[in-house]
Amino acid sequence: MGGEHVKGRPYIKAMIWGVVSVALYVTLLTHQEEINANFANGGMYAFLPIAVAFLFSIVHGSFTGHFWSALGVEASKKKMEVK
Image (cartoon, rainbow, N blue to C red):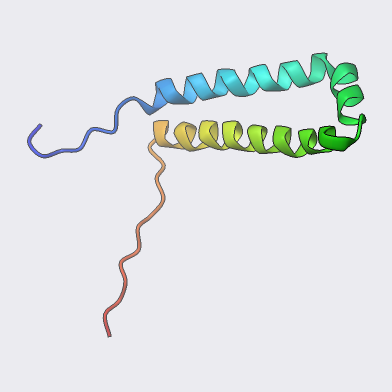
């Protein structure tokens, strides 16, 4: 395996982040009443929807990135042209 760089196991990371993502969505959908009640309290609770959206974004983004890596899809790296 000489100097090859092994990226690890992206499929395991994809599965873990996928499970976390599904757990977040299940929690959100099964506890809608309590969550909406807390979000509507005002004051510092007004930041909760923003924090939850940020959390969902991070978790779902991590899952998506590892999912595509597990399938072997990577972003292309463009080389800068020297003029």
